[in-house]
Amino acid sequence: MSDKNIVIAVLAGSMLALAACGGINSIKTGGTEETAVQSTVEMPNPWSETADLDEAEKATGVDFDPPVDNSLPEGYEFVTYRYTDKLLEAVYKKGDDEIVIRVSTQVSGIELNGDYNKYSKEWEENFKGLTVNCKGDGTLINCANADVETTHFAVLINPGQEGKGLTADELKSIFMGMQAGPLETK
Image (tube, rainbow, N blue to C red; front, side, top):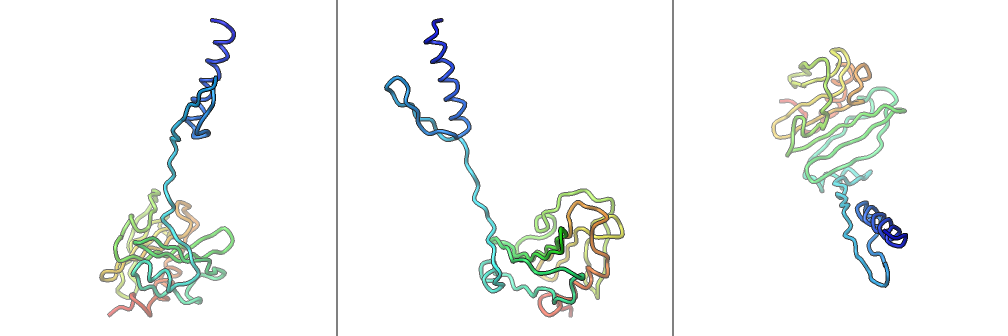
């Protein structure tokens, strides 16, 4: 094989590698143009973000009464609302810790909370007749779900980080802080 053929073979291999990575669309070699098909496809982000609760409620069809400020654990502040066509979530932060409250009329359980972590304990808490399914270390709660008629709720705090969750009293305060809306028990 001549030096010229080796150079062409190396260049052709490099072009194929770049094309496979989606790095180029067309290359001119020896007066001809070769077109590479871009092989990477990105999924669009399904989430929208807003500070306007009305906007998020209209987009999802979900009525949500966020917990009143004094029902959140001390130091947590509202960050944003995020939503898809199926659910609405409110995000609260304190330093690196994050509480996410999700609400939906279309999805529930693990599909709503999105937390596929394994926890050492799963148990139920009962807050004024509201049954809440909890996951965590048995003392602190990282993931909680509750259903009220056709509205489904999930509360997540530091998912997957056992020992860095909410106490039952803190979780109860959050749920009862949403009492003015769909969580109003009858």
